Structures are given as structure tokens and as C-alpha cells.
Image: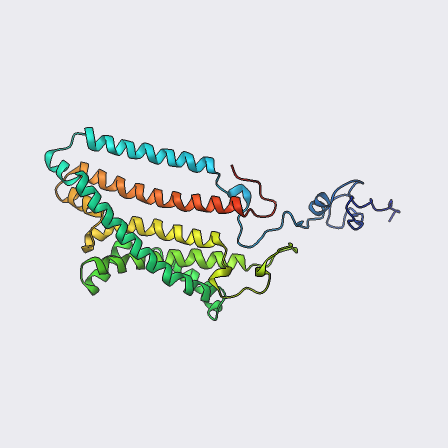
Length: 309
């Protein structure tokens, strides 16, 4: 092998000398003089500190921007305005206007939000400690099997779960809340456990970190990244808000009553209003969760991530 030139001098700042790279050794041609550490790392296929994957983070390219969220918020406002216009000026019969009167809509909306709030709190109270036990605690070996089962269980129809529980517990608000918890607990558990497990994945190269969280992962909620918690809460709310429309079939009330009333009495306008309100509530819940996640990423960006706008 022919004699190579001396290795290029290290970049300013006291970095160590970088060896020349021989072609044919599974790496590109030798790096020319003056190349910085980042370029050398990319040339030899070794991730550098600024490009290392940090557990519990998402690449900046996949992050949503605030601009996109504001566009989505504007679309929600336009949809609300359209729904209000339909209620105010649409071709509704006197019976339909009675069902979708402001007082009736307000009552049904409060019932829907109440069911959502209680069910979401119960789901999170179950998922957070169980998820920590599966991801870090004594049940860690069961983490992957539980994720597989959770993925399969998500295919169970929500209306079937709610009706079965209503038959077992009796129709009413209690059985409706139990059905909502059953519908949302598996998706929330899967998201939470997967997020904590990603956070525990070893880093390919050492990345300097500071703070008390540098030691071994502890089975404590305080060591779980805020983004994982926010994603779990958002998933729970979106699932529960949508499934709460089915509470009308089990005597729980809510906006689903508009759907059943419209279908039973062949009042298509009432059905459209009920479906529109449920959809908007789910979109708003998802938007609030994503907005909170973007704000957290802006305050605590991942190493090498570009600032979000």
C-alpha cells in the first residue's frame, strides 16, 4: 500500500487528530484537509453528538409547526361558523329546531364533556402506574407481549364493549363510563409504554446530559418525559370523546342522543348537528394536545433540532 500523506490537522478547539480513511475499508475516500468533525463522522458512518438519536425525542423534520396548528385552528372556527349558520338559517322543521335548541345543545354538550372527563381521569389513573410497571418495573418482561395484545385489543368494536358492560352492570351513566374506560385503556397503554421504552433505548454515541436524570431509569412518573405524558393524555381524550357518542345507546346521555334521535325520527338535520359537534370536540381535543406538545418541544428542543415556527 502506498504511503499516505500525514493526517489532516484537527479543527480548532483542541480536537484530536483524525486518522486518514483508506478506500476499500468499507468507508469513502480519505477526508481532505480542513474537514470538520461532523463531516468526518458522516463519511465513516458514525453518528456525531449533534445527530445522535436521543431517547424519547422525535426528529425535528416530523415536528408540527405552530403555523400548521394555527391553520387547523382556523379551519375549526370555520366549521363552527358553518354549523352555527346551518342551525340559524338552515331548513329545519319546528320539531328539529326544538331538539337542537341552544339549551338542549348546551345540556348535551355538558353531559358529553362530563363523561369524557371522568372516563379520561380513570383511564390515566390505570395506565400511568401500569405502564411504568411494564416499561421499567417488575413487569418489564411482559412489556412487549402486552403491547401486542393491546394492538390486537384495539380492534374490538367500541359499541360491542359498551353494550356488553351495560348488560353486565345495567344501563346508565356508570356502565357508560366503564365502557369508555374499556375502549380507551388499551390505546393509551400502548402509547405510554412504547414512549417510555423508546426513552430507555440506549444512545448510539455518548451525548452530554445534565440534571438528576442521568442515572439509571427509575420507576417514577417524575422521570417520564413530558412529551410522553402529553401524547398519552391526547390519545386518551381523542378516543374517549369519540366513543362518548355511543353512551347514548347505554343510557349515558351526551351528544350521541342527537344521533339516536335523528335516526329514530328520521331527522337528518339533527343527525348532522350531533355528528358535527362530536367531530369538532374530538378535533379540538387533538388540537389542544398537539399545541401543548409543540410548546414543550420549543422550550426543550432535542439536540440538533431546528426551532419550530
